[in-house]
Amino acid sequence: MNTMDTAIATHPFTRGINPRYLHLLTKGATYERFGADQPIFQETFDADRFYLIHSGHVALHTFIPGRGVTTIETLGGGDALGWSWMFAPYRWHFSATAADPTEAVALCARTLRDEMEENRDFGYWMAMRVSGVLLERLQMIRVRMLEMYDPPE
Amino acid sequence: MSIPNLTAAQHPFLNGLSEPHLRILGKTATPKRFAAGDRLFREGEAANGLYLVNTGNICLQTRSAGQPVRIATIGPGEVVGWSWLFPPFFWHFDASADETTEAIVFDAAQLRKDCEEDKAFGYELMKRVAEIVVSRLQVTRLKLVQSVKHDLAAALPKGE
Image (cartoon, rainbow over all chains, first blue to last red; front, side, top):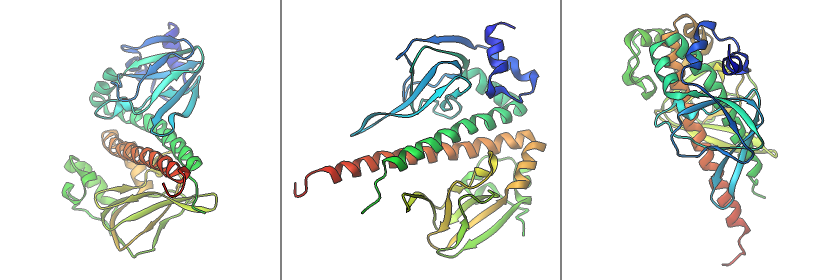
């Protein structure tokens, strides 16, 4: 296995995957390096990748009128980045920027979507895992909301 | 009391589901009616149901600094409950009926089993549940923006 295949096979996201589906993840995938402060993706742009972070840190942020760019969460090695690629219209809901030098596998979203439709067993597994990622983001944005919420006196 | 003849027309969540998948769902579906103020579930309890709301409204709330905070209002055509799909399988919020509310309730333990046994069914169900999480996230983000606006309004000098 090359560096990228190893990075995919050993990433926590793929824990418990049926080994015969690993090659579906590697199809069209690339190994990416980002410098500190380098944008990885931007809100409203095409969500065409799904990232498995290998090392470094990624700040997930959004623009809130009156408050400016607000960081929702910082992700690190072992985290999965991105879920918008799974849902039409396939556009990023947040922006992501490398907080420090970051290495990640960028999986091809179109390939994943096609394979999920083609192979429901793989599709079910992926949908479960990505929904888990999505749920973590939802919990975190709720935490941010409650932090910003001022109870009426 | 299950709903053996569950049809796609009974709720938008069921749109596009095949007959065999509707039959699987029908086995665990129960029609339920909640009066205003009735509690559906409490934060921290084991998550054991999926609720498709037909009429009325459900209030989802949590507490912040001792104050109840409404997270979302779930109305007709909408869905409550996905915590049963993901560890640690307990409810993250309190849910209660704002008014008389009718819903179709599914047994989560059975749904989980059905998903595992029939992955095509599991895939269809997961896609739908995940869409709900996405829309809930969008609503939450909007509330975040509104709460900031509220803070700004409060910070402005009075009488201007």
